[in-house]
Structure formats: C-alpha cells, structure tokens
Length: 235
Image (cartoon, rainbow, N blue to C red):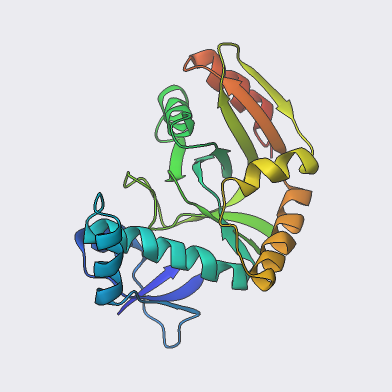
C-alpha cells in the first residue's frame, strides 16, 4: 500500500502496475492515518480484465482505482469532473465535454497562444473539486485519462465551461439549471440515495458560486481569445 495526498486528503492506495506507479509519484507523502483507502485485489483486477479483454490489467488498475477514489471523494465534500483543467494567472478553468469533442485540444490551444509558462494544465481528464475555507478549489489528481498531464496542485476555480464543436465561435453564460444536466453527464452518478444526496449537496454549493458557460468553438486563435477574454477572472 502506498501513501498519497490527493485533493488535500490522505489516501492509502494499493497499486503495482506501471501507469499508476508513474502517475502517483508526484502525490506520494507520509501520514499516520488515511482519510481514504483504495485497494483492488489481484483477483478482482484479473476478473475485470477477463470481462474487458480490450484492457490490460495495468489499464484496469488505473481506471478502477480512479473510480474508487472518485466515489470516496463524495464523503469529503468533493467530486471529480470529466474535464480538462487549465490554470491561468492563479485561477483554474475547467472545459468539460463528451470524449472526442475537443476539450484537451482547446486547453492545448490556450497553452499555445497564452504560453505554456502561463497556461498550465492541472489535469487533462479528471480534476477534483472541493470547497475548503469557503473557497472552491480545483486539484490535480493522478488520474488524467490517456495522458500524463496532471500536477499535484490546487487552484481556486474560476469557471466551468461546457464545450461543443461549432463552425461558429460563440460563448454564453448559462444558469445553474441549464448546467446541471450537462454536468451530470460528466461526473460520477451514484446509484445509492445517500451518495446521490452527497453529490447534489456539493454541486449546489459549487455551482451557486461558480460562473458557468456554454462554448462553441473551432481550433482557431480567435476561439481562445473569445473564451479567455469572456471567462477570465480579473483580480
């Protein structure tokens, strides 16, 4: 078992395959008592691999440890959002969309046009969101999808943007009511009533304080300028 600190929580995590070893390295720390313990037995990994022959046991460990942490995080007032998170000037902006829509492409364009030293990818697939001391933070996690783009850091949340492909660049502010179905598609949806209540409680708090947008864009510099200039937080 390995000791990590993820989203300001002490995590005791069992893993042995290369992807988790690489992804977890930046989160290793020491503590006496964990907040969360995640360990998927070898026989369970073997069973899941047999049921999913397109995945290796390495893949299974990576995916299912992330899912277990995802679920446990609800008990600590947090959740993970399927999104690409970029930090600019001290704030995190999350671009969320269905796989293949282009969220990672859009944040990569932020890096291209704003500079990689200024636009920093916190997590390219599953950043965590938690409220601490009245501030909503975005955290890097070891689970970043098919890439290794993740950093062990926390940054105040600036905005959540729901992205879609479009031949015409546009962005508009949306309400919490409009955002909820879009967000629920991109996060863990519990089957148990207790866990669903925990998720709805944290969403209610986060969305009430967070600017929410719908963005349609292409892959141009103009799309980056439009989104950045609209959603940026000015200190």
